[in-house]
Length: 293
Image 1 (cartoon, rainbow, N blue to C red):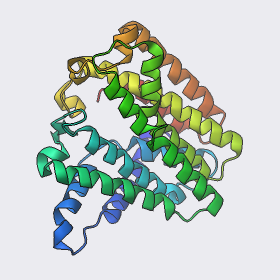
Image 2 (cartoon, one colour):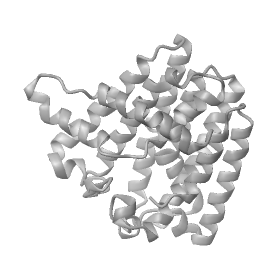
Image 3 (spheres, one colour):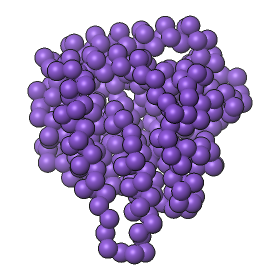
């Protein structure tokens, strides 16, 4: 199956389930909070991470429906990170996904709480998945590792610490393996766990996600140099303006493009060793370098 066909088949299911888990309650005191949560999740997004989770589940012989709640939980956690990244104390971005960022729409306090609530709701989705208990615990551990000091939060701290500081290649890689790559790797690992994959398949899925995450980040860095607001959904040039550590900034555009291609080649090789239904994963890796947004 092609990636487009897989996406068409499952994206509507992802959107439907996200609508359900973010359904507003009846308490008026938290109405603006719930509106901010829905605004930040349901207003667009490519859903790459949940689609990867479902695809890895299927690649190891599992049923993607079993991974739907964990996949949606991962997307909620991804959206939490975007809401917090956009805050004035972090990246200070006014736009996200082609519209005002959460704090511009609802205020900083509500945006901060919305991010917190999305993080917790995401964990609820993974913790409530109807899978074997041992694999559920492993999935939760993988998610914790991807989010905390060893993952997104640590990567964001490194990103802040290196603003305006000359970085070397190893430092840039350290930051982005955590800030971007960790959750993508966890998405793939969790999909393989839910699908009942062997230890070898789970490890291959995690490393596949790491390589896709590397290619994805390099492409993001390149798009920040040449993209548009309409294509990216936010203003380009932010990394350069804030003197952030990026791959093109450290090794140059040509070398960054070569590294991106090498990461894709490794991802494709890993996908082909995971199982029989890996066409989607192979196409996704190639898509990471071809995207224009």
